[in-house]
Image (cartoon, rainbow, N blue to C red; front, top):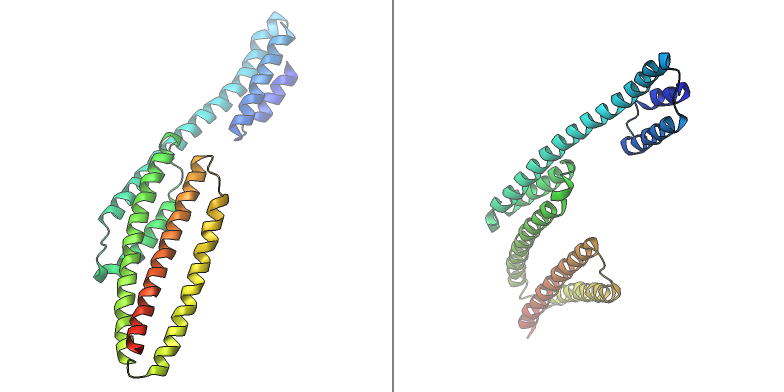
Amino acid sequence: KTALCEKAEALKDSTDWKKTADEFVALQKQWKAIGAVDRKQSDAIWQRFQNAADYFFEQRKKNASLQRKSEQAALKVKQGIIEELKQLSLEATDRESSIARYRQLQSEWNKAGHVPFRDKERIYEAYRSEANRVFDALDMNRHKSGMANFVSGIEEMSDDKNRLFRERERIARALEQKRAEMKTYQNNLGFFNVKSSSGNSIMRDMERRMKRINDDVSSLEEKLRLIDSKLK
């Protein structure tokens, strides 16, 4: 039992909580299996062993309490980020500042830390839903702004057929690349097997990327039609 006391005292400062708790349980079983010692030493040897065990489990309890507080703080921060995403301006005139804040909020989310396990999936889904909504809206503004600038540029070169032809070739190459990219995603999607919540998450991300590519394809096709109307 003295040897078990020494082992317990060597373990009591460990912060490998799960493994060490299991080791203490094993030591307690060994203690019971050894049997009684002389009555004059029984209380002292037991108290020595128990002091080491009590110290470890008290430290584990304090750590768990600190972890819960940290997780609750992280949950509060992440709830705040979600609320701010809901309030973020999606107006085209505010696009640049909104994008900057959007990226900052992403960084803050990643740094916030772990939330309570029971809230993990719920809070992440709420964040992802808002983040995707904001991104899609800002991306749509990018398409609108880009198309407006493109129309203006085409009008400027409408009298120069060579420039229009070169621009058409550039757009056609970009369109071909986007279609090939879409084809790759479609092929990968056919082999994808959803078996878990993480699999569903990857599937949704792939579908969002495919939607953005499809939007790009539509935009490029519209640009080609505009150029062709000028070349007639």
